[in-house]
Figure (cartoon, rainbow, N blue to C red):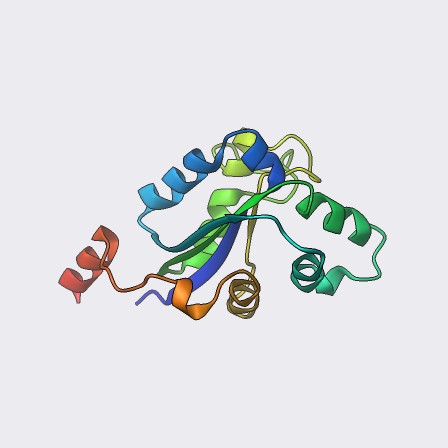
Length: 155
């Protein structure tokens, strides 16, 4: 049986500025993942440092912080069966030139530094990142979406 998980997905500043928010949400909804948290915000210095803390000290770290704060992001929490791996597959490789045709990054990203979307890479990262951007009471998990209905019917 697949594992139900939560993941953090963000449309980065370049994706917001290019008007790709709706298209990215549509892809995850079409897949059957359940949107349980959504907000548009400006990332603070503290949030950026917490989000990219594992890269502190690396040469590209200051650029990451500047970029994620260069405009608003759309922060989201998605829930579903194997949603972390599924979302990462849908996003494609970090470098859009290496991303598989049909993925978000292959379709929309121009450069590795401006790759439109972020997604958690593990359950631990997902929970840490969700905690940076959302309070528990901001998540709406009470409803049942169609994918969950189908899974319940199979069980």
